[in-house]
Length: 166
Image (cartoon, rainbow, N blue to C red; front, side, top):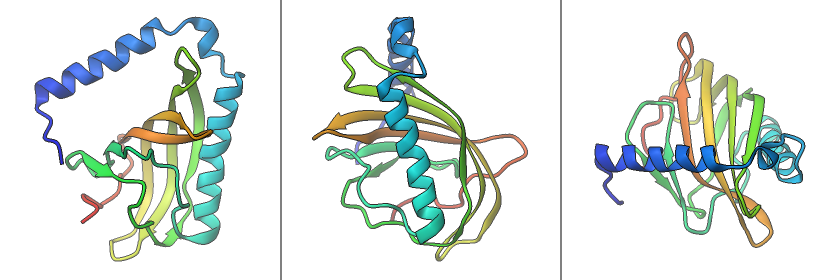
């Protein structure tokens, strides 16, 4: 796994924010086809897990996805062949989804809130899960997949208690 120093993290965050600032207002339209596709994918993913108690297969870039989880732990690297997480219970809902399409239509940033409860098998349940989510999506082989994500607990809520994929 690649080690990121604080300076590198700040540079990456600054670069991402600069890119977003350069996105033309027309590309930020929430009614764009890209925004609709990604919103639908986020909602369908939550619905799938709510009904099946296991993460839906796919959804991660073939190059993997760098992720900061809401547990507050270190950055995780998820590969597209990581085992699916299984749950005892799952009632998360995505709310207030905003999608910013980046120029070229092959990448976008989704920002939203995730709220509800969850119980990952083998971990303690989280009854008051409330996070802010930022995910970077890229188009690969005609599908939107996650390339990076950051979940951070909202004050008064909890994040996960998972700290690694190991």
